[in-house]
Length: 154
Image (cartoon, rainbow, N blue to C red; front, side, top):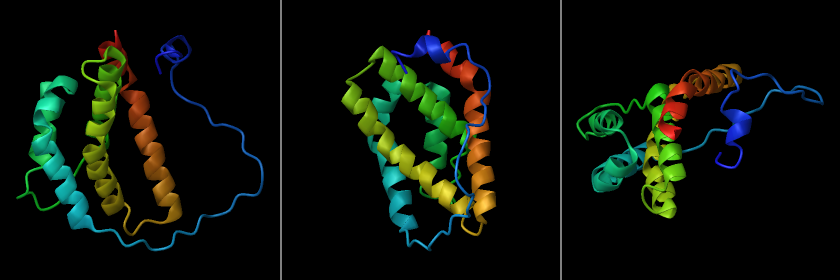
């Protein structure tokens, strides 16, 4: 993102890219995932990396993460909006080198697990088309919050 800032900072929206070949529906084989383990890795990561996250994340984003990471919460709901803010705050922190860039990247892993678990739960019984629509919706959320990234980047 850094070396190409001038290419992306003023762009609005997105456009479809051309594809070739026959369209075909992707067949998704069932995959067994240990949801409890993913949940625990997320919750433990949020608790253990709090001091690191204080250097990377805004107080409001960190507070929201701590709220959803509470073990007594029945169902993890790491919203698309919170995920996009998290990613953008990590990107801006990486660009500013607020701490070691390696530590920044490693600190994102437990948060990714939380978002992945939420995505899997949201799409557990979804069709391929529904999953594609949900991914497109996430992409649109990244577009919608781009001003937030630009604000932090500068």
